[in-house]
Image (cartoon, rainbow, N blue to C red):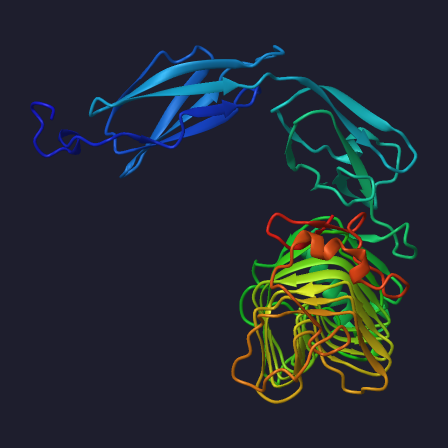
Length: 478
């Protein structure tokens, strides 16, 4: 106990706690590393290296010391030095700090349209760089359809808008993205933001000749989070294609490009407001395709024909997609991926993990399949599927046993049923319950090709080009 202290915490001996005894700072000037201390009231830092500055922010329980590199280390070897922190109660802790070597590297802007590139060489690892404006690099080429930069030429890598910050970790090439007219697969209209996705919904839902999206190709090049106003309150997201009518349904191709949409929230069970029926990220897809999209939803509540990705499919397909998290609920035809699959439609190579709640025709992947349509190579990993009425299956249901096909599907063997009728007896690859599988199958289960049909249109899951196993134990898109 310190002499002369009366009502101060420093009179109470406390052990010094530190979050780490070793920290690393990148080689660039201004890079920082934090050390969190608990309990000390004051301290002395001894033997601080010359190339470090420090500051601290006290809190009720301790403080955070921020170390800042104040010069550039252009050597090929890292600096490693040790200093001491002494707390008010006399405890000491040694901190080893490493400054990684700043290695020279190159940033290349590839214009990705056959017109060459620009190379910037005066960079080094650890440096924060601002993505350039294409107009500042090349002033003699058209700029109207420039949509930003990507680490892969096809837009499947990391996306950077003009002015976005990136940290150099080595030589890097940024490829220009060009927003085409949507007429061919080579000139997609690119979606880089929530604003652009919402604009697509508005365009389709307005209907009329100005909304003609027949055959237009849309491609995501950035992950999107819908947990932002106005889409996370009130009715939430308004689906793309609010009506089965031809001019108010989605009729193009939507390529998720391996990107994700998170935070989807819809709360509109009322029969008086759109989108009471046909509810999901997409409402009605009529003559369209949705593929290569990962979704992690907050929750979807609609009326009839409600699904995580689409409420209703007509002459359309959903392939290589996943829906995770939250719940999907409504009245009739309720599924984790699609509510109704009908009129020559197909859902293939998809899985869902959301809880499903409905009255009639309720399934883990699709609520109902009918009228010359397929549900194939899909996996229902939902924790529960609840039907308060009839027609419930782990994977999906058929409204017409002659002209609807469930082929080669699997369902979580421990899936729960609550508050409704039980699953129909039996299970199997072509049964509404699917063949049984674990709630989280091992990687080998997904990649065994003899488990899946190998002839078109029932392709096995492609873990060479489309899927990889994620750290959380579920497949994720590349």
